[in-house]
Image (cartoon, rainbow, N blue to C red; front, side, top):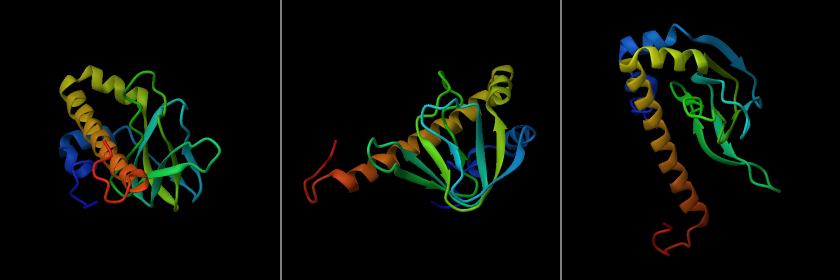
Amino acid sequence: MSTQSPTRIAAALSAECRSRLMEMAREVNFAEGTRLFREGGHADRFWIVRSGTVTLDVHVPGRRSAVVESLGAGELVGCSWPFKPYAWRLGAEAMTPVRAYEFDAERVRMLMEGDPSFGLVVGHWVGQVLAHRLQATRIRLLDLYAPHGGGSFL
């Protein structure tokens, strides 16, 4: 994914919106192999990667979790925090040492509710990220399960 991808914070949010959001950030570090969250857990925070790689995965009963995407610098980790019931729909793990900005989801939701224009911009960004990840997952599933040369999967 290019540095100018519309899903990366620098391309998705204006300098003013980024600044307002970053006022609520705290710097955190994760060692390689650290689980950031598991499917079904409470989505009470989210992260923006500063450096390193985080993978998103889905639990597969009786097998290892299947990686659906890898995320790097400037990318949002955790998209479930704005939506009730605030539960993770995927899992996430640090594949390398990761430096990130961490945000308290409730505080950000309160700011979004208190400032509808800010809320619209941040909500639109999260929506763009979700749309991108759904498409990436669809392509990955086609690669894994569609019959070769068999046409469309969906």
